[in-house]
Length: 339
Image 1 (spheres, rainbow, N blue to C red):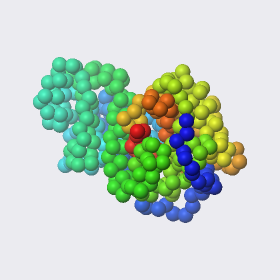
Image 2: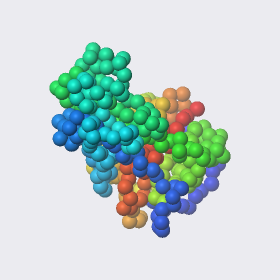
Image 3: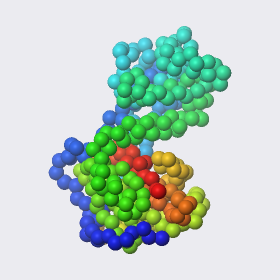
Image 4: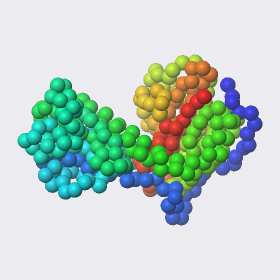
């Protein structure tokens, strides 16, 4: 099924974008969300903090290099002076009044939450705009050190996802503060989907064969594409080969000879904004140019129209950290809605 009536061809393609000169301040992705303060009883020597740090500092594999999502600073609760300034704060410790961190935890989460910890043995709490507007605090706590280590081991990845989701939620309003209303409306009226387009992004291309569009923000270059194929069911991990083929065929035609490395690709069940999705990430290169990098594609199924939507994120930014770029791209991508 094609929703494209008649669209113009665009010569420029994503992999041909050359980033040169100094970065444009207005288009730079923010990296402040990568700051993280980890508060515990004994700082970097605290056993629970070390266990949690193994998740918070785990490298993200971008195929051409590994990057840490967060720059973690450990601090003892007793050494805190005033209100922490970090964008993200994680407090880790046993909930009691005997220790400094325990006192800090109990004053942060309140009596009702403390009662829940005593009932359940361990819990994780998240607080937006705490201690101040724009900050995000997570409390990982338990009634004993043993229970604390256990909840970290079972839910450590969840803590990382909570922080990342909050980062994107806090980043999104600043990106859309100067939204391109005209382009947002144009895409909806032409193709029947909505994507909130930040002002620095522009329409790079739209073509009927294969059907799709690309939005580009330069310096450094990050690309958000949306394409769709006929499909008859919710995608699962068992559809990995078919999804790989669908994207491979699209990018070969659309991006002037892009190819995907079948040995460097991952799949997982995920979400994109309000929709369940299947996420595919991997490495791309171009058969006609010396170019390559990583991509992250979210497949979302629309039952009514029997369409599989693909929200395709990737960057061409040699020498530039990738994680802030993909954090921004996903923050924008999560505004995707089909009618």
